[in-house]
Picture 1 (cartoon, rainbow, N blue to C red):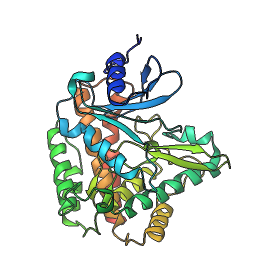
Picture 2 (tube, rainbow, N blue to C red; picture 1 turned 45 degrees about the vertical axis):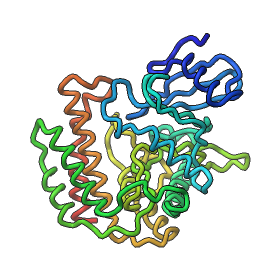
Picture 3 (cartoon, rainbow, N blue to C red; picture 1 turned 135 degrees about the vertical axis):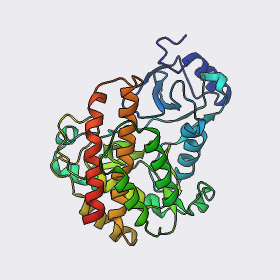
Picture 4 (cartoon, rainbow, N blue to C red; picture 1 turned 90 degrees about the vertical axis):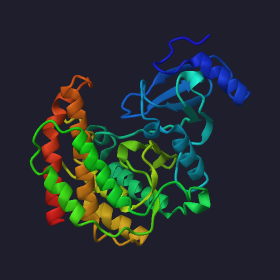
Length: 344
């Protein structure tokens, strides 16, 4: 009998289901814990005393199934596993809510560290930090080089009109969270709309590509390598430069002490955004001349996300450390978006 069920995951039900669907996979009673730090879907580490797996399910009390689509996540990592893009092996998908209360999937456990802060990176030093971040660019190039049709993802999204839909989507998200004046946010949204670039050929897009969404571990030769790219819930077919713009945004050195937003760019050895962009351009062969638009869009998108969190906090719907300071960050992100768009 399993003890200490983590919230949202009945380990006895999970064991019975795994025994039915994957006989012999589990050798003993399951124990599990929830992984802290996830922003949306819930992640659990589960083991039977000899083997370890990871389980993903939607958040408790979720309403919009399309926003937490387990089948979609399972599909993209299954498709990418045979490629050069490092992803965990997907072992099982369950769409039956009756097992643990929501759809879920099980994948292999990959050892590694998601570096979230400059303080974490300081522990490995500037040389290893630089290598890890440059590896992040190289892995992104590998992802964007995958032919979606060849891996069975030819219908994974709607690339036509991708940027216009993204801009409208995040504009609607902003409208849904309006409860105060935000100087410059409408100006930024309108300016992005006026300067909409022409997208290159569509690729598989991760949608939330940053350092703390990958696991990094040292090989026997002492070299840090990306062992797994995680959190594919926003993946689709679309404009690859949206991933690059987001990576460039997260590489900006912001003076935000005690910020609740994960930022590691201030770490010694962390390459700046321009070097990452140049490396991506050289390795991918893509024209990145419009990258300032994509970076400004990333600032806008994060500003909208943070404003949504702030709005829910003011309504008493979100609690936790740092949420009381989210609101003051939003104008900083808007200002950076405007500056990036105007000055490049």
